[in-house]
Amino acid sequence: MVMMSVMDHLFLGLLGLSFILIVDGKNCEALDGKWYNQLGSELYLKHGSDGMLLGEYRTAQERFNGSAGSSHSIVVGTAPYDHPGTSFAFSVVWRNGSSTTIWTGQCLVCSDGHETLLTSWLLRSKVNTCIDKWKSTMIGRDTFTRFEQRPGPQKPGDTSTDTSRVIDAVIKNWGSDDKPCNLNGNWYNSLGSEMILTQRDGIIEGEYRTAVERTSGAAGSSHSKVLGIGQLGDSASTFAFFVAWRNGASVTGWVGQCHICRENQTEIIESTWLLRSQIKDCSQNWRSTYFSEDSFTREEQSPGPRKKDDTHVPLVRGEEEKPVVCGGCNKMNSLILLTMSGLISLPLLFY
Image: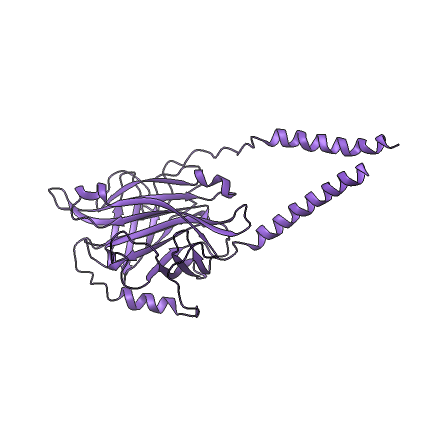
């Protein structure tokens, strides 16, 4: 009886582990569809084979009456296609650029067994001067699930909306490119990174050559693609752009505003950013995200990789990544050995 009981428990444990692995493998394979956060907001996403995320956002909250606009907002983002569970980023521009929110996150299956988008966000509101940037940005976290967490505005049942056509219709009415602080062209930050942007109809695209990386190879073996959204050529508006590194091993999202600053009337992109690194499970979320600031100018501020020089990776590579040490592995191994030795010796008790 004792031997059968122990073996039954062992069998059930292995069966449960197999079930968890199977469930985990079937979840977070796609970001498409509807998601809901803890405030009642609804996020609707469509993931293209080019890695672009398009969709709609219906917020349940706004800081001031009318700050979210009179209808749903357009979502633009990036997520490596056919790489489930990697880091991603998406953004929403509110009321033609009066404010912009960017989210960085990852889809994981947590202990409750549900698909969950664990995200951090930055909300950038437009300010009138360069000095006022200190009050421009808020930071927080959102958790999105497939099920509603509380009541809020929702997209009608028909999800066949041609989202890209809606985006074009909205963005093309945003303004012209003959205003100050046009984002097109080359920009450089204080670390030496180079960003080359092209903005058409509000969509921002380009190339990013980072001068720094946290660990060796984290930035990849070439320059990275930039994607973003913002009101075309308007220095009074906010915008966002993002870069996915090494097929989503990490992603950086910037949110900012262009100002004419200093006595020499220098164009400066004042931005804050979130760097999200891919994690293995929900318990590691606390260490997934870094936050800081960047100021980009038209003039080079420090040496770094340049397109004109055909250099595309950091001049000084990052530190070698240290292997992750499992703090409880020794105890677990000891427990497994003890359990196995107990199972082996059990028949001797009844011999």
